[in-house]
Amino acid sequence: MMEVSQSLECEREVLASVFISPTSLRLIRAEGLERDDFCAARHRLWWDALTTVEDDADSVLDEVTLRDWMTTHGTWEQAGGAAALLALMGRSGSSAHGHVYARKMRGYSRARAIGT
Image (tube, rainbow, N blue to C red; front, side, top):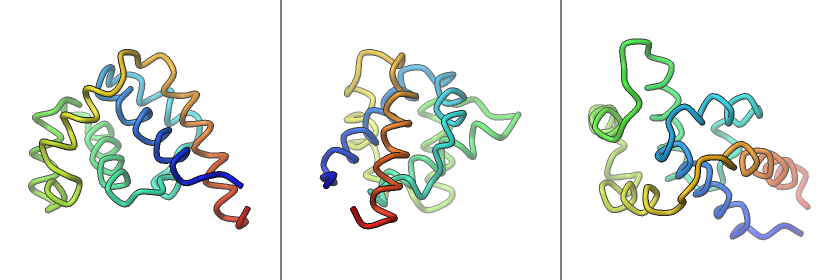
């Protein structure tokens, strides 16, 4: 049985990879990763902000824009605010493997859905 800690670790790596290189979000989304694949509610809030900001052609996907979007939508503090953002940004030195972690997350999500 998959442990939740494994899924949470992958979630943090996926988010961290986007903070390192915002363009990696396209590869991660191409893996089919969705909001409900995130186990942690806090991570779902970050994902919502990242994907919504990326989808807005007039926005730049950076820390300032994310904070502004999340503050406007009342999710900044729920997601952990500046402390969580700094922790995620400092987590990984590479964005090259974000899509691999996304693929693992999809597997963990499917396993949770069938109860294994």
